Image 1 (cartoon, rainbow, N blue to C red):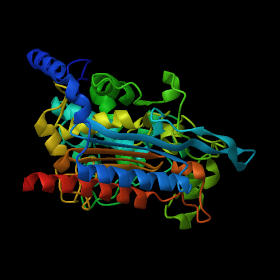
Image 2 (spheres, rainbow, N blue to C red):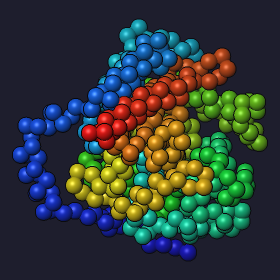
Image 3 (cartoon, one colour):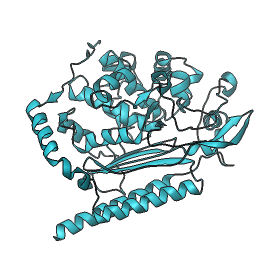
Image 4 (tube, helix red, strand yellow):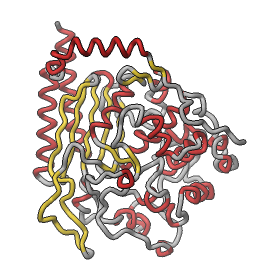
Length: 434
């Protein structure tokens, strides 16, 4: 069954001119007080100072080459700082060498977001299409991708893809079988299921590759064009993009030295992944330090840099805007981009303990949402306290350990969030006591 594509501009944009004028007048009146309003409460101020020290120490000890930490509350940026280097090491002649003059990291430096793409591009795109009525969360994937209308994929719904419960393979080297997005989707259709559909949550890159394909089929536009025209540009975002070099950007946080991790995933069956094909059948591995091109092999080799699971680049400042759009239930700067009910539906904990697309960590206050990226990126929203937190690191540039792993930043992320949430909670408790 074929569906009419959604043309440009038909997605709802509910603007109120009168509200905008009233807001502009209020801002003029309150302008002298804006600077004072940027100051956090004493509890959060302590939490920010602690988080700042944690990140600074991690960089000083070279647990990561560099980082950017941004903290906002109720739409106001309270802390934004860059630490360390955008690039500390480079692959030269087969050897990873330390740069004599490392490139400094700036708050404006673009990061490869890796799997944060899943929420900041693909999930948002599906939200927009659901909001406009163009996509039904509980419709079978075959409604939008007819080739998936037959077993074993006929029982998979859009919701299954968003909740990682489709049963599709968690990961496969799609580039062994595909040179472009169309061939990649066709190959996924040929694969059997790894798990039973709906039986449990098994985090799947392949599921989000299909969500990206649904966005393209339904909207009639590639994923990168759709999110740019329907989300990023209306929000005033200019540095949130796929294939950023093609758009004139030059300042990037470096990631890995080629794709040694993925190569081991294919060649080493004891590394935790299984590929049943011939590992020697393809040998197009990159042999240079990746700067400004997507680290993820499937996104780069098979999808040309634009995929539903990886490929997006951005800055901490622009990611904060997207977090605040959700924290404000679909409204930003006086303009409504999504209905509140749509945002609520995506940020409601399901039977697997997470939202649609979003992780909902149990260690954070109820209603919080977050996502990580393999390159060392992290975004989190804490509605209870109005917090938007972005922590971007370039951990891969340090290289891998003897065990083949990149530096672990989970502890740093957790400590930063504990400090910030505890500070915001102290302020809220003090307010309640007044």
